[in-house]
Image (tube, rainbow over all chains, first blue to last red; front, side, top):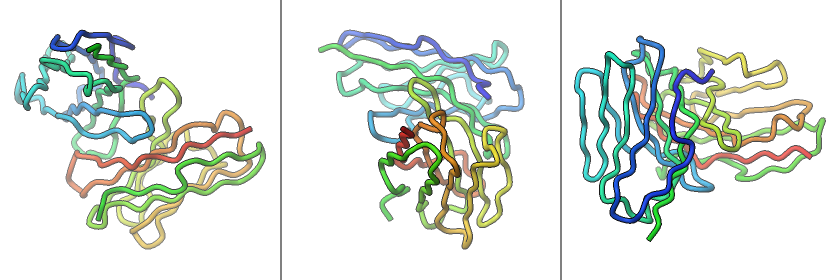
Length: 112
Length: 113
């Protein structure tokens, strides 16, 4: 079931630092790669997403880097803040958008 | 419309009992998805509906599980003869038909004792 591999499992970063989370996928039919953020007791919320026709997408402090040949993508959180402390999931889906597969998650802790 | 709504938020049941969860998607969303999330893991796909039609079911969805979306609006997920291994967070999400952007509810946390 898990077709997307995510690392690290947990990450501790100082306030103001850069958080980097990595994902790798196997299915070359995937063409949509979102990142979700989940706080305790809540469902995942879409943070940022990318399609394979671009290598990078930036929205505020969040950037996705995408390497199609390596089948890898990563999330960079610049100037990390304590409020960013959450679990982050990478995901991937195909053209029909009905088969979203998630990574196992990374628990990010940003220390003040 | 305030998003995807799931009820109940928490359910504790004894092993062997049946449970039913409800999901109310965003009203204009044609697609509805059910996922299961266990502690420390990402959501795992269970099934999805296009309007009232159930178009795909995961192998995770054993014959004790059944999902319905009778009028293409809200959906229910029923688990019969619950087992301790069914303890998990059950998440519902919805999306427009040709969109990759899923909106998740806050989930129903099931504990089987």
